[in-house]
Length: 505
Ligand code: BES
Ligand code: MN
Ligand code: ZN
Image 1 (cartoon, rainbow, N blue to C red):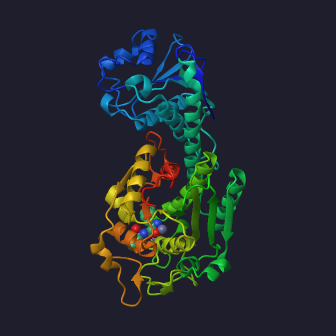
Image 2: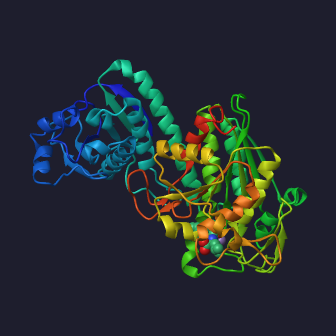
Image 3: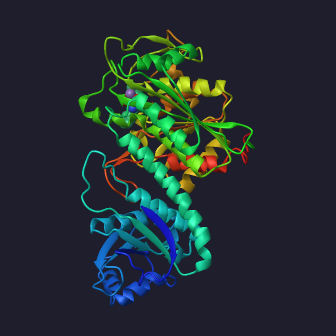
């Protein structure tokens, strides 16, 4: 799909369908929204008529498709709601663009025209809107069709139609940023949507090498013997039950060389989590191919960071393995020696993600990286606590955490700060080893984060639990059913702001 910025009039642009927007509480259309007013006039008041009869309300994610009956160049019109005028943000614009494009694809449109939506409606920054529309179109139209035939034609072109030729250069640049962020999110979705019989640890290693070649990154993929020499006893214990060989993947982006330190993005990549000997109930097994979503997100972020040529130096670290039961599998009661030297008593082989993170974090610290950002589908408890829209964020450093949360807001990905509660640290204490790998029944997302924090020590560290948010059961705005690609955009935003401006160094 191609996204372009063109100069013209939305009512006469030659496309199959157009997207226009309106707010929930505007007096009819509000003063400044020229596009929807012009379209409504040409449609003989079809839109205002539906507003009067409350068929259209302008609520967020609302989309109504009308036929133009030959009164516009486009055959079809998607009228998208932006919600209350005072609440319109680029997030709403992104979702409206996604809903509008999806609705028009459903009725067969191959080309779509749109105005700047929020920019015209409530005066948002035009470049922010252009980027949001590009992200909305690319993410909202995402499909995973490797194993299935498409239901109809796809949208091939989206034109953002503006009136002022002087704006085109800056808006095209913003569109490019949006396209890169959205394509990278979709790349992460592609990896997560793949079944576990395809997306094995060695396949992830191969993909890392291929992507590195394409985007000018360097990649190193270590195998089991290398991990043995590095002393990664925690990661190796998880891997020992599977016939699929594990991988430890590193990708490096040089940056402009001005930063004083290298950001580490660490992603949990369990390509299938059966729970191991502490096997999961059968109902929860099928979704466990998603347990590499953290690894996929950091890998995809590296591609975006390279394509956008950000200044920061960034490394991705991806410990990848399956977690299966079997004759060689690790057991509850086992005591492991992690790379850090700390011993870990296994209470549940299903609490395996924190074991991978422990060794990957120790490796990152041994390489002098800082800050550390880990992303993991770590706990069902986080999904219980925050639901399926908000990811949980834990940190040992207020400054880095603040910057991370700001990046999430700019990216439009929902995150909620959770406490790294010292009071609960004792729940991870073991009678036989330095630490055990589960707490008790309560606060499971917190005790998991506390476990990981023991390995981060004083190094500035942020932990993002995406167990609730890595997947969606429905289409909504930029989110589509299946993998969400969260938090690729936040990681890029965090890297964009870079360590150059870091107040923490
Ligand atoms: N991969 C799971 C967490 C998960 C659960 C992700 C649901 C997505 C949806 C993780 O490895 C796990 O099994 N965690 C256990 C920890 C428990 C044994 C302390 C959990 O959450 O039940
Ligand atoms: Mn598990
Ligand atoms: Zn897991």
